[in-house]
Length: 320
Image (cartoon, rainbow, N blue to C red; front, side, top):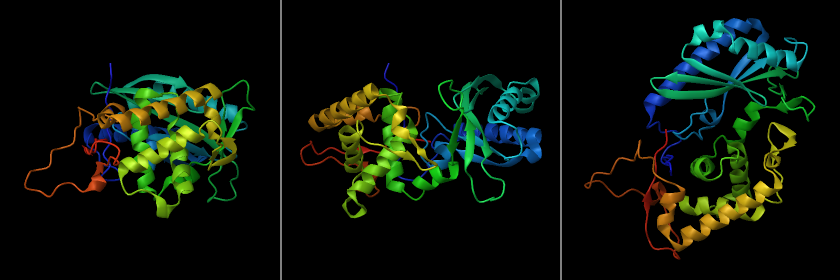
């Protein structure tokens, strides 16, 4: 069954699904308070991370994740750090503190928490990290415990640098939101972080002066870039120059992604109505119709089709 995911391109973060966003925020804040109470002075800070912090959230998934920055001296090893956090999150003490907890899952570098609030499943990740140095409070470099038998058991990251990399890039964020709506339906193995880096790279390579003014044209630019480059390009994590994020896909997955982008572009060029298939309106949170006595929406708030396609415009789809 085809599902719908929403995006609103008119503002950085329009929360059409305000009620669900509020539930996420309240539960996240309870989790943060519980972690602070448990680990106290061993914590340097707790960073808000994920798509919500980057202003790339869509209303099917609010990534209000937390990255716990522990002091370098807090734990003897990264494994001890991770296991201590996991043990606490699995405890009755934590469950009683936050309420509504249904599941706790150990993941690659994080712990997944699942809640059931007013018949809505809320899920976000808690990532424990140990500061590389306690001497420089302005340095947010962290080592994470990597739960992978084939690895060294650690991974370096810097959440602040990842967020800064997309900060102020409104047009890029708009494109990322659309591509995330596409990927949740058509290519779930594709990481949102890789989509961010691909979008930014496609814009940078084009040059600011040459970026199209229309949202569809900007989306098309990035889709063509992915189609033509995903099998060969290397994209480094801004928080860890040793991490090539394109390696999150296998060679086979890269080839499939290139084909999927080629297919989507070809079908949209042939039939502009295919936009509604690849980037569907969310029926639960649709755009409000503009009153007839108002000025028509500016082109910047719509998908623009090029001259080769039937001249049809589509209203922006909503996200929360």
